[in-house]
Image 1: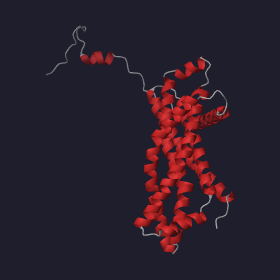
Image 2: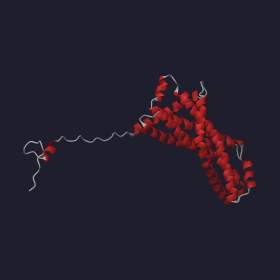
Image 3: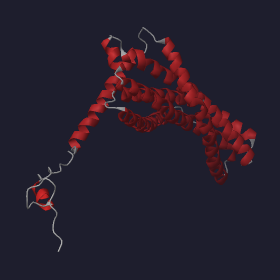
Image 4: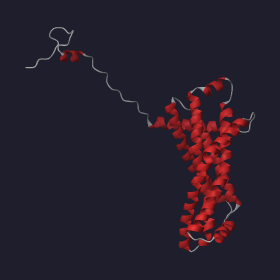
Length: 292
C-alpha cells in the first residue's frame, strides 16, 4: 500500500494533498473589456475630425513664412528617390495590359483604329494618377509616417512644441509640398511611359498600325485629359502626405504603435484615394468637354 509522503518541515500527519488544499484559491479570470459599437463609432468620428482639423491647419500654413526651403528640397529628393523607379516599372505593365484589353475589344467591334485613343486616354486619365497615388502611399507615405512616428515616441515633437517651434510648419509643410511636387512630375512620367508601353505592345505584339494608333490619339485626346490627370495627382499627393503626417504625429505607445500607424496610414490613404478618384472622374465626365 502506497502512503502519501509528508512534506519536509510540515507538521506530523500533514501530506502534500493537505498543503495544496490549504493554498488560497487563484483569483477569477477577468475578461478584457470589449468596446461597444458606439465607442468605436465615436473613436472613428474623433479620428476623422482630428484629420480634418490637422489638414486645415496645414493648408493654412502651406504658403506662410518662414519657409523651410532646405527641408523641402531634402524631402522632395527623398520622395522622388523612393518613388520614381517603382512607378516606371509598374507603369509599363499597366500600359501593356490596357492596350491588350482594349485591342481585343476594338478588334471584336471592328474599330481597331481607335485602339490608340482608348488606351492612351485610359492611361492618362485613370491609370497614371492611380499608379502615382499607390506608389506615393506605399513608398513615400510609409516612410513619412514612420519617421514622424519615431520622432513622436522619442518625444522630439514635444520638445519642439516646448521650444515654441511649430511642428506643422517645420516638419509637415515641407513633406506635404514635396509630395505634391513629386506627384505632379511622377504623373507626367508615368503617363509617358504607359502610353509608350501601350504603343509598343499594340504595334509589336498585336500587329496594330502605328499610324492609326497615333492619329486616333491626336484626334480624340485633349489637353483637358492631361490636366484632369495632373489635378488628380495633386489631390492624391496632398491627401497621402496629410494622412501619413497625421498618423505619424498622433502615435501613442512604443515601436509597435509606430508599425500599426504605418499600416493604418496606408489603408486610410488607399480608401480615400479611390473614393476621391471616383468623385473627380464623375465630375469631369459630367462637366468636361464632349468628345467627338
